[in-house]
Image (cartoon, rainbow, N blue to C red):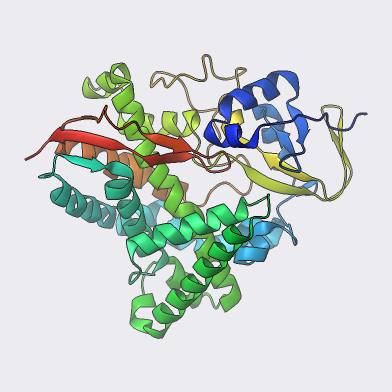
Length: 390
């Protein structure tokens, strides 16, 4: 049996666009050690689908991991029963029923309010002016931190995302993450002190009613903010960009051949907002003839799996006609994203149809190209657009 082959990457180029490198890895070294990330990357769908449920080997419990050190040990960094106990506690806040009965109407009210303000302007950066505040307003409701400022919510999320992807050890990035988590702790304390605001279906409320220890409540709220802000934000802006830059695909929606759920599902396959999930090897193991040793760091590259040529023809192409059932944007094991229903409802049922129905002749601002970046978390940094003002 062999040790993982070495595969070197250009970190800056990988951040700008990881997909060419990931394609080479799938073909040449689908399981490889990348020294620049100090991790073994799995880039083929079948390998990830086989490995992720095997929690006895590929463990989410990472005592020295960045997420544990910076945010506390949340349910995503636990395995087995410890993970399931906390997942059951938060389920009433994120279940399909809760999304349908509690949150979807609040998502719609927030979208309508934002679009009413935007419609007369005729121009905007849809990341900053729509996707960001809409995701934040949804997240305020779901977490129970209703007094938070949307810009603060986004800044907290980004600081934590940068912190837990800070494999180069940048001290300034770590400091910003600590500042964000301290601010979240203060927001949680303020919400708990107003007990009447915790008697609802929010995450904070259901965890308090279950008598979850406060350190676990804090860690899980931080987890939901870190992923629950950036993933729908990036999917809203990214799917909008995908349609506006692929008018042939948008025409399928206009003609009723494809719906907004197809738009969402193909986008999160094409550009996975959460492109990677880390694991710690718990014991010696062999996969595809490659040896793994205890405490090896492994990255499941969901973004690479979702462009695996074995399952998706012309995977670099955004195509609403393709079958996306084999994509794994939310994971492929017991740590499947608990917020998947809320994200799909916010993006596909509310944000996208509301945007395209309300803003007439929505189009890209050709004088200001959009910006996109990231690999562990990937999304648009800006999306300048124009439309005919009301």
